[in-house]
Amino acid sequence: MRKRMYGKLTALALAGAMVLSGCGQSGGNSGTSTADSKAETSASSGAETSSEKKPESIGRTDIISANSSDIRSMDPQVGVDSPSATLNFHIYNGLIKIDDNREPVGDLAESFEIVDDTKYKFKLRKGVKFHNGDELKASDVKFSLERAKTMPKAMSNASAIDHVSVDGDYEVTIHLSNPCPAFLYILNDTSMKILSEKAVTEAGDTYGEAPIGTGPFMFKEWVPNDHWTLVRFDDYFDGPATATSITTRIIPEGSARTIALETGEIDVILAVDPVDAVNIENCKDLVLESWPAPSVEFMAMNTTKKGLDDVRVRQAINYATNRQEFVDTIVEGRGEVATSVVAKTVPGWNEDVKPYPQDLEKAKELLAEAGYENGLDLKMYVSGEVRSRAAQVVQAQLAQVGINVDINVYEWGAFQDAINAGEHDLLILGWVNTTCDPAYSVTQLFHSRNCGMSGNRAYLKDDKVDEMIDAAAVETNQEKRLQIYKDLQVRLNELCPWVPLYYKYSMVGRRADLKGFKFNKNTSFHYLGDCYYEK
Image 1 (cartoon, rainbow, N blue to C red):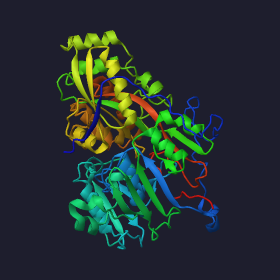
Image 2: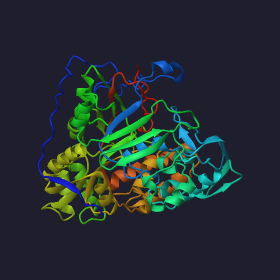
Image 3: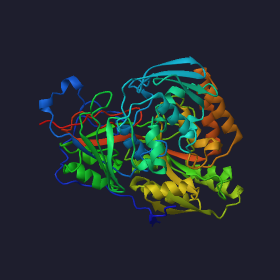
Image 4: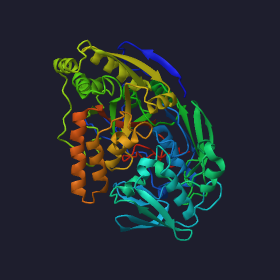
């Protein structure tokens, strides 16, 4: 296991606002979000339709972006974290994708039919090429989806699949073991993308280092912790992309990413740190695009560890937490207090679930009842600049009730290894719902079968939670199904495996003259293939 710990933090020291040279306060853009408007966006301000783009007007098309963390794998059934999913979004296609109206539509599937509750039939597009020149066949779909059932980070999404049958080269039928009303939405997830059976079989365990997809971009190179580069796939079935290459540089510090954007070293920041957002807004050469993210930022508690295995201690930690402070200081007012484990933008969010109010005396009372009147010591695992600052807020708040938090900061890969192994007492992380369905907000995160790398980093094991998740998964009446998810949120609010911290905005910073960028409101994984500069 990699154990590259970047440092330990023991004091509350929130970073101040950065001042950028060359970007005065008078250069605000009309297409930015503000704390007052909460959801204003310029999501279409840089986009053009293909008919509006003329070859003679297109100039530079090698796009350079920046992200805070490196990828884990280019195997979509392994690299399901946000940095990896962003890359894999450009390399692969699925049978289905979710359109702007949150409806499932064909991607590699030319058409599809729900034969009955457990049988889905897909007709594949003909002539779709993998990056190695091979044609996509039904056998590749069967291989990909049945492989997903065996992969730890994909098996939860694929768990409803009993088997896949093929009829010739272009027809596939997916047979489910039980009804799964969310299945078409699940097929949109990164882990359900379609692979080349030949490429995976030949590469074996090294496949994630040299991927072969059907997407608009092909892998060129990956220098770990420095950058990755994709190049345009000119035989893409939906026509070649506008951008000729996409390079993403790994720049952990938010201020450094913003300076690189301001100086023109990069064209777009895929994840703007909240403390840097105002500097982008106030620079006339830049645009900040923002929208409420389908995600929740949370602190998970490892329910198998001493102290945290007592619900009274977990409730005490919730009572000791002032969530508004995270909104005010960590995201600079660009978000709101999280009231539930489910993101507010996701269908089935329960508006009646209320966050625990900060009540230090109640927290101390619960700790005493649990036998911790003298407090306890906990290890916090965290990765990234923003979450490191959030950990310091947690540290200061819990100290008020006698809980000492030792903050351990890791680079992204080592952090993933550690929390997958259950080493942590506490961790801070975020979860993005990429399917527009509530099942994806709870199944991986709280079902007992998904402890560890499959998503349940609280290691929660509760029979009632499992029963409710399983019941919702097969309920075909949508009203009843959503009610189960709402009731489940009440149960989780009582068990407190998490402290839901805040709902944030997805924020992208870009050069004002960058054309073709379209903000993805559904998943926050943004496609860069339409981006270009005019001559």
